[in-house]
Amino acid sequence: MNDAYQGPFTSRFFPPAFLVLKLRLSKIRVLGLVMLGVLALAANELTSPSIGAQEAPESVFAEIVDVRVVNLEVVVENRKGERVLDLTEGDFELLVDGQEIPLEFFSEVREGRTMAAAEGSEGSTGGAQPRLEPGERVETSYLVFIDDYFTQAKKRNRSLDGIRDYLSRLGSGDRMAVVAFDGRKIEMLSTWNQSPADLQEVFDRAKERKGFGYLTRSSLRESANGEYAAQDLETKVRTVASAVTATLRSFANPPGRKVMLLISGGWPYSPRRFVYESDNLENFDQSLRDSDWGRRVLGPITETANLLGYTVYPIDVPGITSTGSDISQARPTRRFNTAREDEIHSTLRLIADETGGRPLLDSARLDALDRVVTDTRTYYWLGFTPLWQGNDENHDIQIKMREKGLKVRHRESFQDLSRSKEVSFMVESAMLLGDLPGSRPMRVEFLKAEKKLRRLELPVRVYFPLDEVTVLPHQGRFVTQLELRVAAIDERGNRSDLDLFPVTLSGSRPPLPDEEGMQQLTLNLRKRSQELIFSLHDTLSGAILLERVQYQP
Image 1 (cartoon, one colour):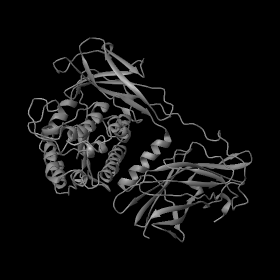
Image 2: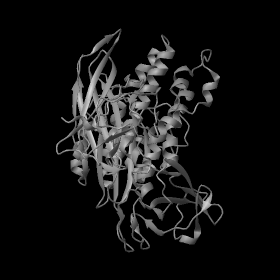
Image 3: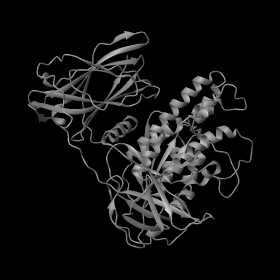
Image 4: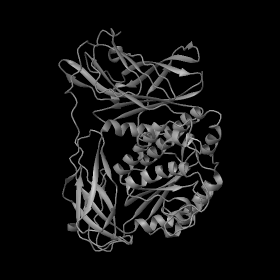
């Protein structure tokens, strides 16, 4: 290997759940670092004489403009909760960040069929929205996420029957995909399928899966060590939230309307409040009542769902049986720890409210699909084009009705997603799903590890083919700009966060055919089996190189 494009650095890596990176490069400016841990930069002489000490220019790499339309499914009801029909475009006022903007297409969908033709437009992920004639059927894609990690099998299976037993409600052209998460890996139980008979078999198999009932075990530990239980529960909720986000990303572009049925084993909005909240609050820090932990951790779910156009219907698996015509408003019929119940319901309401869905609480889980199909068959379909900047900013969406007394329900925001964050989502999906379609491999070499108390310092060399990345001439040099991401999953399913930092390499000549670049890292690992994930992203071409390697100390 010619060493013209080596760019050695040293990284300190503490998986899970602590990640601290230290970077050593020559006098190359590293821009836009986003780190969870502590990052230190140091100047260092490179081993290769062909890499110069000049700074990489900021203006080498061009911006990519991606124009997309945001689609909204808007439900309009009167004071009695009845659907309001026959409205026109002029009845709606669309505001983004408080500013009114024009609609680019408008259509009413009633009982799954269009009442007025929708103009062809770009979908929220770049896919074209079909031109529909009046009376034409609108397809719906239902994505089912089963949380085996937090659920007890018996209660979970009642929720699964609430979908299985109503599969006949699916219309012609509708489809369903089913995935399950056990705390470590997402398993696809069925890709998109339009056969109710096939899907019934899928749910029968899903009912045979183990339910780990994590929440119950965590609650039982609190009396012995409440702080440990709270921290552990936070980690578990964060893990399952990442799995939901990865699932959405992996099913980004089905046709028609997109709906997720989120079968939740009970994720507290604030795990600390959940652990300490009881009849005796002596050990509960009152300041925790104002914590925004839940919004930070659950935010990626709603942001991703809104980005992709999914309406989410969370299903409350551990819910209690209640009475009433609308279970989301009903009161429980037996004594229950309402503070803890509210913690779980707060999570479900947040996800539903911000994506335009409804939380299916308590006994609503027993006929969940019937309720969801009914709720998603009649709505207004609106679309508009924002001024995309790729800055990862969230923008508020508000629909106002010009007629007083009408209530609306719709997704409440969209995210102006950058390419860098999109790649992070893709790699996170690969961590949980085991693959990243279209990615190219790299080569990872482990050097001799040095023992440090309870950890190991493991030098690692990551080799990548230079003909897979873009190298551009600039001021007599040849420059490539990349993004490196590193993460780990241990044998218990604990994951480190996926952290990112830019890497810029330059050489005095163009790379030779089959020449490799090399980056050297030092990983500070716990002494246990780990799966390490390395991802390198070419920010210009969009190419992603991915390598998963198992390390056994």
